[in-house]
Length: 146
Image 1 (cartoon, helix red, strand yellow):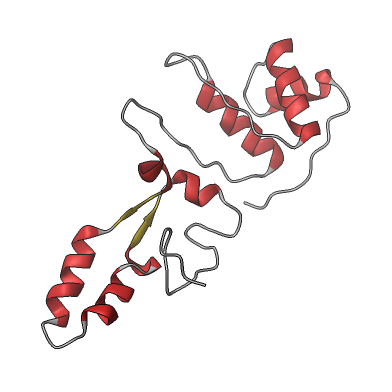
Image 2 (image 1 turned 90 degrees about the vertical axis):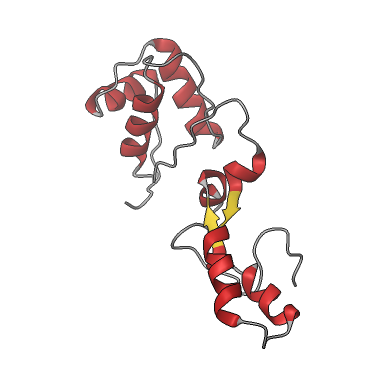
């Protein structure tokens, strides 16, 4: 799905577009979507289960042609789990297949490359990153390589 620019002229335009995308918006929600589009800012939606948060995101994504990246928040979710995790099983397999013949520095550089990185929603949301984004093959997050 490719992103394209949508500009709403008024709140009724927002409400109609959301209705066409299967979301019934009141004036408050339409106003928030309108302002977010005008200001180029994201929308943070929170609330109890079943109140339409995900459907709002899906509908706005459909209207704008944007990719929807969903982050399910819960107590104990920290930035490292929201950004990325290391594929520990794959790292262990890499260490075992290399054996004791290789220098640790060579193995370490490989172990902390993007080949062993599991991207999470926040990292995917960064433009040019994620499953199909460009890749710096020699260093993942926090590696400090130039």
